[in-house]
Structure formats: structure tokens, C-alpha cells
Image 1: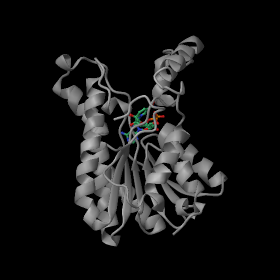
Image 2: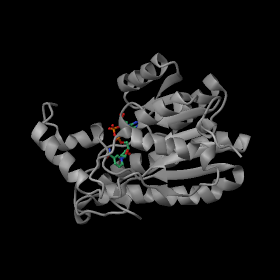
Image 3: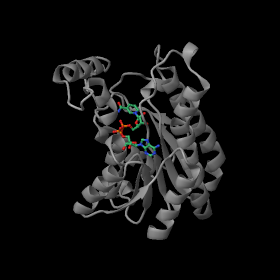
Image 4: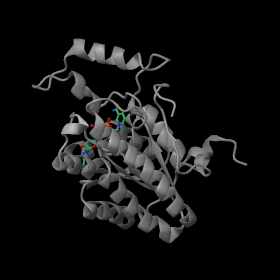
Length: 267
Ligand SMILES: NC(=O)c1ccc[n+]([C@@H]2O[C@H](COP(=O)([O-])OP(=O)(O)OC[C@H]3O[C@@H](n4cnc5c(N)ncnc54)[C@H](O)[C@@H]3O)[C@@H](O)[C@H]2O)c1
């Protein structure tokens, strides 16, 4: 029985993280690297991805960047290949990339709206799982974490596209856990609550890119009020949950949606 912190170490493990140029994905990449993993930082934004790599290597960790558009299956294949070519395999894959959804009543959404939403929130996650599973299955081991949201629990008028995408992630996580469990691969999802990132900053950012401090204060107060603890999360709250899920500490955990959301929803 391991009773010390070594159960959370990832020395010698190889991880790929999408959306690692910002917010939750960046925190995940830095956190996994901080406990010994070699990380392939994947993002559509080259500059931000490079910043994450620099932050990791400056801190003494191992990381490379692979430009990846998660809506393109070939990009996910190339990401996994980069992990294999540079570090020799893939033990951990985190599908974190995402963009804010179009706000529109479901009665009004078009086929093009659905295609645009699902290209990233659904296909982007599934393609990542497919590409990673192929390599992990050869070794008979692996851990995948997918990004859902509190929005999967709590539908809201106007936010149906986001709700549907994040619900689909829950469904694919459960199905893949069943399909990949016999191959030694665990698949889980996280459902963050309100977390301060570039994604949430759109709620209080002016068209010229400056922050409206009053709107920010109101947004933070409104989001905190949804938690019985009156807190808003930061990316590290999600990253530490991901660390648990990909570590040996979670060897008995698969097919789960786990919520770090300050108690906003309880499933
Ligand atoms: N921030 C929150 O409050 C919150 C809450 C629940 C769920 N989430 C989810 O967390 C995920 C990450 O959000 P965040 O808050 O860290 O946002 P963020 O904007 O800080 O980071 C998202 C990253 O994804 C990248 N990205 C966007 N499209 C991409 C694509 N096609 N291919 C590759 N990379 C792409 C962006 O360049 C960016 O670096 C999203 O899926 C979001 O839905 C966020």
C-alpha cells in the first residue's frame, strides 16, 4: 500500500494536453509537468502554446509544443505522434480545448450552428480520445480526461448549444470507459464550475480588449453566489482534480464525471 505523496508523482509518464495555451489547459499542463510528466502542449494558438512551454521549461520541467486544431482529426493524430516521436509513448491525454458557444435559443439554432459547436466540443474531444486510445491500447494502459462543464447539469435558456456539447462529453466518456476499460485505459470527465480564465473574461471584457472592472466585480460576485462556499474557482482547482484522475491514486476510477464547482451543482 502506498500511503505517501508518491502516488501522485508522474515521473517518466508522457502527457498530451489540448487547450494548453490558456486557462484550465495551461494549468493542467504545468501541474502534470510539475510532478514529473513530459508534456506535449497542444493549442491552436501558437504564441500562447509557446508561453506555456516556456513556463514549464523555465520551472525545470519537460515540454514541447504541437500546434493542434482539435476539430481536425489529423491534428490529433499528429499530436499523439509527436508524443511518441519525442518522448516514446503516451500515458495521459487531456482534452481541455474549448471556445465559448453561440448564445441562441435552441428553437433558433441552425445546422451550421450545431456543426460549429460540435466540431470543437464534441468531435474535438472524441477525436482526441480516438487518437490517444490507439497508442495507449498497444501498451495496455492509459488515462484520459475530458472537459465537460457544470452546464451539463444545469441547462439555461439561450445556452442550449453549450449544454448539448457538454452533455455529449459525459456520454462519450461513459461509453469509452466501457469500450477502453478492457484495454487498461481509464476515461473520466471533469465538470468545472465558474473558473476565472480568458473564457470567462469575455463576460467583462470591452470590445477594445480592456477589462470593465465593475462588470468583473459583478460577475465574480454573481458566480460566487452560486456556490454555498461563496467562491469562484481558478484553473489550478481543475488542474489538481485532473492530476488525481490521471495518477495512480485514481486507478479504480473510470467513466465518472467529477465536479470541482464549489458546490454549484451536485449531479
Ligand atoms: N472557465 C470556466 O468557467 C469553465 C467552466 C466550465 C467548463 N469550462 C471549459 O473548460 C475548457 C477550457 O476553458 P478555459 O476556461 O480554460 O478557456 P481559455 O479560453 O482560457 O482556454 C481555452 C484554450 O483552448 C484553445 N482552443 C480553442 N479552440 C481550439 C481548437 N480548435 N483547437 C485547439 N485549441 C483550441 C484556445 O486557444 C485556448 O488556449 C473549455 O472547454 C470550457 O468549456 C470552462
